[in-house]
Image 1 (tube, rainbow over the protein chains, first blue to last red):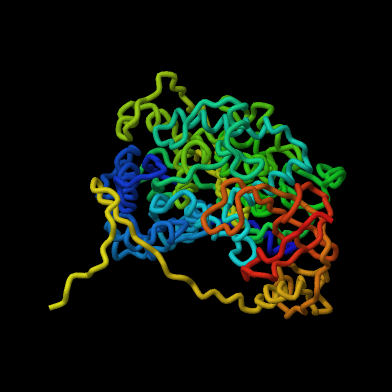
Image 2 (cartoon, helix red, strand yellow):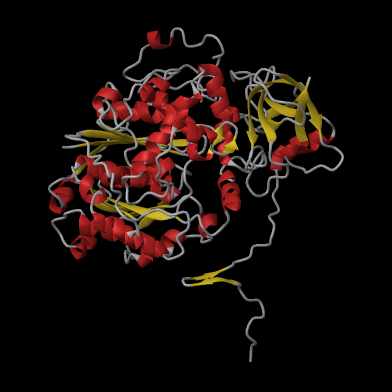
Length: 456
Length: 156
């Protein structure tokens, strides 16, 4: 759609408040033959029910569940259709109803949205959201081809069989229009690999220099390997509940104030120019000089309408006026350094064309104005696709509950995953964090969800 | 008595047990109404579509073609698109995925064509890509792949 009607832009509302009460993760690995997918999901759900200081026993919690949501991106990776039924059975939730959600890279965000809809409508009052991905049954080359089959197979996939290339095309155009120093993009990779060093769950931690990122092997020009997300195996689980149930379960439930979705054409090619959809912190004035020089289109290849749409709805639903001011934490879907900078603009951290300032100013760092991807993100920690959007919210939940240290600093936790806590460990708990945002993202922006969490 | 199967799965590892599950079949994929586009490439034509509904605002060509208009769901007409374009963006793919039929280091390009509302993804058969560079269409009619790869571009 090029013209959006008032009804198209109706702000969603929940009939009942929705709370996030507990979260659990596994560690994330490129290959994880030691545990099958059923076992990984069990491990994550056990962490959610056993380690989140709940006021009820795991048995009691199980007896409170009345609907389940499953989140897995790609059946062909796991080579198992209806895998959700297998996981649901393994977790012992039969005969409760369940649904499996699939929206590419945004599957996790969409699964949480679906669970929130169930709780908000009164359909259910306690819902586990179980996400996982198994990407290690095939070689990396075949894996990339599997992922690229989530591009249009008739007109796109044959051109590279490589999703990074579709982002590389956006990167080139973004650079042409906005002339951002390569170093700025590399800074995002440096930051997220570094934060991954303080996560026992992380698959790709590392302290790299900007130069190392830029000199790293190129996947598809101009993106280097260190600027691209991991391909992971692992699981993440979240429990959502209505108010009454939430306070029965925990003294520290976190409100899911809003979660909204947007979309755009699967093929980047098909994105026609349209007026910029303005966020609460923007006006017509913000963009009066935008379409000058080499910029002729919006969203074009430089912006994601789906992210803008999701943020527009979620910000209005949650009463967000200025995201940098109003949020204390952010988790973006940093699949590639370029998509992260694009997202900064789409969600209004800076106006279009000025996304670089968000990272260059230091805002995006721990102790900056809006610490972003302290989890290590997709570049540093994980992209077990179906689990990713859930993982982001689990990390934010623990931050808002002031439990980051409990879930990251305990040497026992590191040992559980066969690692040693690093000697230069940094505590990344954000003091007095009240409000947080998570962006889950698919395709080259085919589906995006924006979730806003708040301390009640 | 029925015999044990003769086909076995190769064991890759024993602890934990990992077996190789071979996949060898193919899919019969129909392009449906879009087949016209792929057959058109064999006649050195780029066939695009345009909405015929007089009340629909989008009068530019769609490429990739759509048989029905996304703005009004009306049937579209087929027309030949120009064979001249400009490079809108590009990338050189260094590590393509399995199934890529071209060598690594092939430049991918998105092209802008006058009168077309989309920016078709394609590849550059010759030369170094640059944004804004004028290119002409070339067609693989000798041994067609019957995929989108049968269309490519060369510097003008």
